[in-house]
Image (cartoon, rainbow, N blue to C red; front, side, top):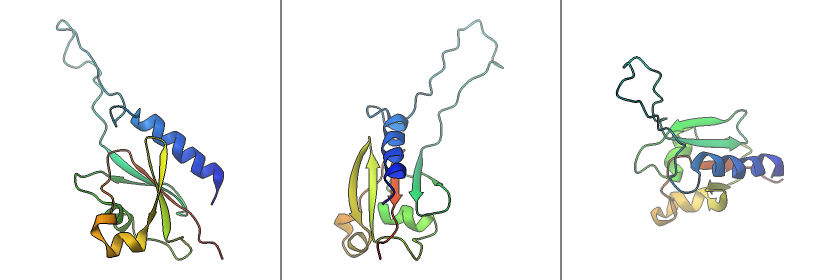
Length: 125
């Protein structure tokens, strides 16, 4: 496992979620006298991030009911040298997840939340 990438995933998860609202701050207040063409921030579309073994970070749109195996599949599947155990980082807390177990047992296929990060380490030879 690459400790630096893993540590960055934990930090990024904490920053993105704020660990209280599970989404970044996106509120803008416009006074009634302001014109409608004022710069208004829109709420960002919730994402799931996959980092690690892939050559670059992969972002997929979050949809309600998205599971761990569903996210891996939407991101293009696992690569040849990937470990079968991944880490789900939520609110800065990593949880080890087995891809094979999640495929075989729906109860172990964790439901994802907006801004979750999946870390895919390299398989040890």
